[in-house]
Length: 105
Image (tube, rainbow, N blue to C red):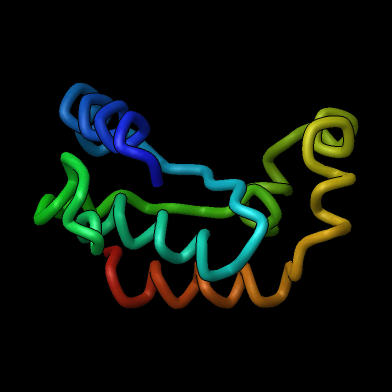
């Protein structure tokens, strides 16, 4: 996750305590997991403003059923549908579930 996004998420988390969920769109499970880890327990690369900052924000990937079911199907297909066809949905979902189980309440 780039440094500017870390800064934005930290600001949102401070402003909207308890009312924030992070939706990710990384194309690979490892990248999604790293971004989820960053918003949950801090930047593992120790490069950004979230170094050592545990926001414990729940994070979901846009291809996960928990998110997909909340979005109008036409909008979803237009915005995510083609990209979803190129992603390893099972691997991404598994990584995201693992991250939430380990690092989120």
